[in-house]
Amino acid sequence: MINKGEITNSNKTLKDVSQLKEVLWINPKNMKYEEAAKTINLDTSLIDDAERRLNKFAPLIEILFPETQKSHGIIESPLRGIDNMKQELISSYDTQISGKLLLKMDSHLAIAGSVKARGGIYEVLKYAETLALKNNILKEDDDYSIMAEKRFKDFFGQHKVQVGSTGNLGLSIGITSATLGFNVMVHMSSDAKQWKKDLLRSKGAQVLEYDGDFSKAVEEGRKMSDQDPMSYFVDDENSMNLFLGYAVAARRLKKQLDDMNITVNKDNPLFVYLPCGVGGAPGGITYGLKSIYKDDVHCFFVEPTHAPAMLIGMVTGLHNDISVQDLGIDGKTHADGLAVGRPSKLVGKMMDYLLGGVFTIEDYKLYDNMRMLKTSENIDIEPSACAGFEGVIKIEKSEAEKDYINKHQLKGKMKNATHIVWATGGSLVPEEINKEFLNTYL
Ligand SMILES: *Cc1c(COP(=O)(O)O)cnc(C)c1O
Image 1 (tube, helix red, strand yellow):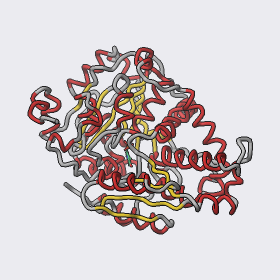
Image 2 (cartoon, helix red, strand yellow; image 1 turned 90 degrees about the horizontal axis):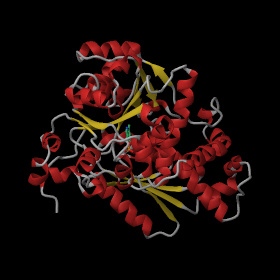
Image 3 (cartoon, rainbow, N blue to C red; image 1 turned 180 degrees about the vertical axis):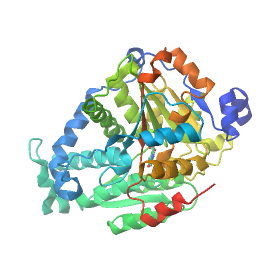
Image 4 (cartoon, protein in one colour; image 1 turned 120 degrees about the horizontal axis):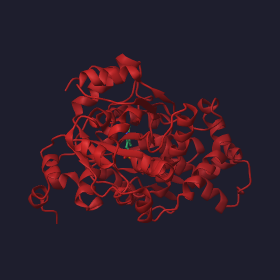
């Protein structure tokens, strides 16, 4: 049993969190990468394996999703400087941002329009491959574009993919599975965005809605899938394949930074700010980045004040054994991509010694940041995706963060820093809904 009073009295951060205050928690367990890596039972060569698999699937992706023709079936997003936004943030929030500010635009990833295009699409492709190999209709050295043929669609049509989602994971899994020929069921809470349900149905996915919160949808989906031997359940909280799909982002990011002549080393630190829901996407990306840049990259998650699931899991060490509701927090946030009450079991423990810390952000700021990005850079992203800005706004402003900077001996190096705000979604948002967002003041 979780005793709320005992927990919140034990720790200032948890007390503030339970009172819905914005906090920034510096992870006291953060340690040198070489030490931290020993605590994680995962082979980084699995990321290479995932990257190779995505390359192998690229010719198929190119056929099934013509929007990826320009990149020859590789689904990747732009990384770009946002100097005007940097100036706007500095003056609006009266803060300091040293070094470069870049936006990683997963908001504009092909097919799913969000970071879920990384993990979700990888998971479905891997499952399709496993099925096809097992049934001897595909060989490892085949050209995978044959999977666009009708006989494969007919074969996948005998199988079902199911997922519980607040929205974007459903879009990613739903669109990819349906296009390959699978039957798809997406289990959503009834307050999930209507346009996402409509879009999924238009792609041929079946959408089931549940009253109550999203964990109910996941639970029901899992139950239904477990009863059906021809069904595969995509488990957002525990899937290693999702995690690996996200982790590939880091390899690709390194190449983009190299192409921009941006150096990352001891004297030129990299800071990355990632919006966090259940933890899979930011966790996978962090794990990937750490495996490349080790102690020269500093990763932070950002969560809504009403849904700080990963934060409370990590601070208490209880991980998925605690939910925000246990601390009297309602889990209701405008950031639907981050509206998660209980963190991933898989990810929290892996982040224990790698993560720099977690920020929380109030909902009204998501819209403010969204407007700022629109007016300063003419870029549209969704509210959840705006959470990352909180990190760069506060990294050099607050006392706690200065502790982080001191502890890691970064003081004189901040002028050489590169900050990346990870914009996790937005390009599928319908025009009129986007307009509504831009006119929302809380
Ligand atoms: C899902 C999502 C995230 C966070 O990913 P998790 O794996 O749930 O932590 C962030 N932003 C957006 C827009 C998302 O859809």
